[in-house]
Length: 407
Image (cartoon, rainbow, N blue to C red; front, side):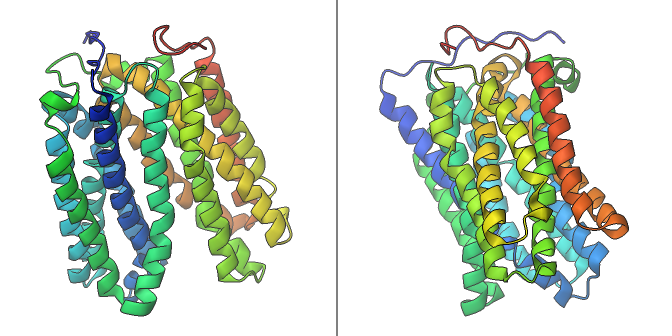
């Protein structure tokens, strides 16, 4: 299928309209990601209460990403053809229903079903909100807009586990999951009231001209984005999953482990907007390539760090480097999405990300059982380094559209 180039998204005489839309999307995405983060510390506890063993616990956790990986390409193409706002609203309603469904899931099988539904609900919200942000971003501000939305997403994800732990400790499991549902309902009301209809918001909807999977995987730049998301997920997944195990074996208090992971995620959030603004003036490929390489270098020495302070330093470097990758990649996605279909492209890169989060824990777990904890971090660093080499090769010669960036 030929890709019909779509004309540039409409310019708005009143910049307040786009700023208000971005604010609505940011608050909504942050609310959803807080809810996702609330689940993290609670789900393994809930699964064990219902008698799940290690393999089943892993399957319950992975089910969220399995449904996202399987359904992402279809949801993206439908959104490009039928709109943005209604998809986001449907996702928020489903997200709220899923939040309360956790409380009714009294078996491992039921938890797996809820997690599959949770993954589908989130797929209707975050990637579609990213696509709409790419649609409405004014010329020369794509990096700022994408960075702002991604900052909100990461801030919510970092805040969620803290809130979940506090709510569970002081008010119980029901209060924690109910809070997740309430946040989703709040975001739903916000979107319904303040997000303009697609015909007014600047959403780009087209009945044809959206990219197929073949189109995406045969385009060098799009393939680079897919590799970036996959290999970044495998590297980060190894750290986020197995750093607590390493710390436990090193007799490190759980509070320090929480600090390490929180610092990593919050630093990623903090750099989103500044790096995004930088990419509005320069070639966005540079923070992508450099960030992947530096993040790989920060992961490899983690099991040799020998204490909390060195590990904190490595997590600071990893957070900053990983955070620099996303704004650049989102800007490249935004430029290319105006040709291929914003949601069609972003949903495929999202599927690559979630697939990496499936592969990494399984492969790392097998390595842990056979060779121990040190090779797990070597694997994460090695995969991320391989990804940086592939992405650098594919983005060689890439330049943003002349009317967008100066670099």
